[in-house]
Image 1 (cartoon, rainbow, N blue to C red):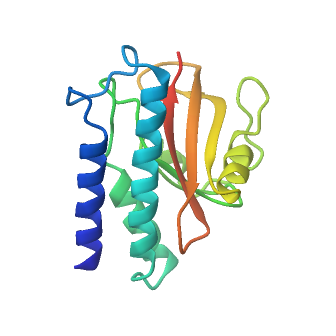
Image 2 (tube, rainbow, N blue to C red):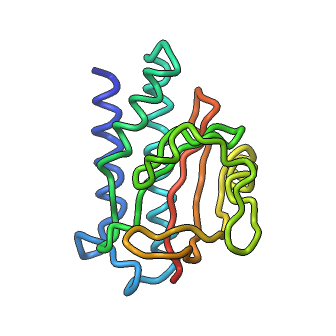
Length: 169
């Protein structure tokens, strides 16, 4: 019951803090500053909810199942390019809302088209409390990697971090 109350409060926070005279945010027409605020609000809310749930889930597999079910249906921005991903600090993918083939894969050595160790940098940023990392990643519905500004935060009570972001091209 406490989990559902926490989830409800998080959704209320997300939708009230992100209303900007329109119901859907368009990353093409809105400025980067606004999209960064949305990423922070969404990621922080989900990190909090998942962290609270972790206190009530007794096994790693039940927590992973909860995380996957929680983030899977969520998409935002008019082109649905907004989604969540979760990794452990060793760069193993726990959940990815758009690329389920990544589940369980260790991406420690993964580099983007510019040679950046993407997941390593995201993990380091999350371990330092969270923040932004610029990298290249495949945009849903398109081919090739596109420039992205990701935002990550640690998930309390776990060894995981959650992220999202906005594609810049």
